[in-house]
Every structure is written in structure tokens, then in C-alpha cells.
Length: 291
Image 1 (cartoon, rainbow, N blue to C red):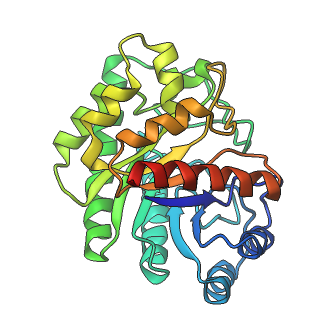
Image 2 (cartoon, rainbow, N blue to C red):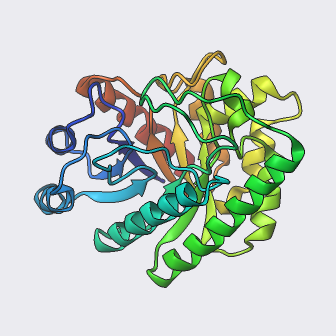
């Protein structure tokens, strides 16, 4: 099993170069380039230079590389200009993935309502949503169209493409696409391609299981075992998407995933020493699974 650490895992992750140097000095080789960094014009040069220095293996995730003017990615948006802007971001991220040999690019699926305010780490603020079945279906159709276009683009470049199950404060789940098992059944049938898969976020889906009594963690994992390309590992107490360190419960789940998946530590706001200890825990857990 491959254990990666997200660049969003550390306290104050905004300066990407600082984060990567800390990770390199800690001896980490497998890095997920996350969504928590400030814009810089030379980001490709920075990550390439440090990749050569430390021997990093990267995977690219969601809102990376960051933009000078922040916006909310939404592949499901009914606002066509927002959806196209999100697709163009994803294509640029796929091009970057190809350039730095990231085997996968993963992205959030989007929302039925575009946020009115963006506040990273505290979440998006929404207008009241029209979350009727008709609106949802229109958004789902937009998501399918976006994913088909991006999967073909990624496949041409030898990069796998994955959609993450959404998460956030439970009160915001009415705005979110792809939080439930049946949604992924539909999406995987719509795009039945081995290049297209899932980034399964354990913490996000734990919130789904607390909100919807029919959702079962193990059932989801086993149903999509061979289409889960990547796993985000963190925990919460069911009240919010807290991105806390994994507990025994999360570690025990790792044994039922496909061992070829990429496993990413995405607990946030940790010190370097805390991250090092968590990476050791996950490495030990996955070694036991491999045995």
C-alpha cells in the first residue's frame, strides 16, 4: 500500500514551498498537492525543483494549482461559465499531473448551488438552494458531462481521473453532490471506464452515515473496491468535517480497500512531529495489511 501525506495536513499550510521543504526534511517521499495554498506564479518551478531535490512522488488534488483570484470549483454548476471555468482548471491540473508524473488527478464533484462566499477552512456560504429533484437531476447531468469530458482528456495523457465524495458541515449537505452510495452507482454506470474512479474520503462518508441511516461505510467500500483509486484518511465526531487524526476505527478500515489504492493522510492543523507520527501509524497499519 502507498501512503501519501497531503500538503494540507500541516498547520498554516499556505506557503507551499515551506510545506514541501518541511516534508522533504522529514523524509516523506509521497505527497498529495492539496487545496490550501496561496497563489504563486512560479508554482510549477517550485514543485519540480523540490521534486528533483527530495525525490517526491506527487498526486494532484482538486484546487491545485491555486488561482490568483480564488473561485469555487463546481463541475455540477447550472451556471455554464462557472462549470467551464471549473473544467478548464481541471484540464490545467491534468496537464500538470502529466508533467510531474502524478498518476491520478482527483476533484470534488460540486454543488447544486454556487457559493456566494468562499472562506477556506471555514467552508462556503450558500444562498438558499432550490434542491428539488428537478434541479438535482440537472446538476447531475452537468456533472456527468463534465466528468466525461475530463476523463477523456485525462486518458489521452495517461492520467487517471477520480471524483471525491463530498463533505462539510451537516447543515450544508443539502447543497452537495455525491454524498451517497446510490449517486456513485449512477455515476459509475454513466462512465463505465477503468480510467474513471473514486477518491473515497473516509471522514466525509462518516458524516454521510450519520445523516442517512441507509449509508454503510463497509458496503460502499466493498461495492466500489476496484474503482476506488485513492483514499483520504481522517476522522470526525459526526458533528462537522473536522479533519481530525485517524483513530483505530479508520485504520481498521484500510484492510478492506484494494491495496493498489493510494492512501493519503488528510488530517489537518498538525505539527511536523504529529504528521510524522501519523504517517508512521499508517505505514505500520498498511504493512500489516500487506502481510
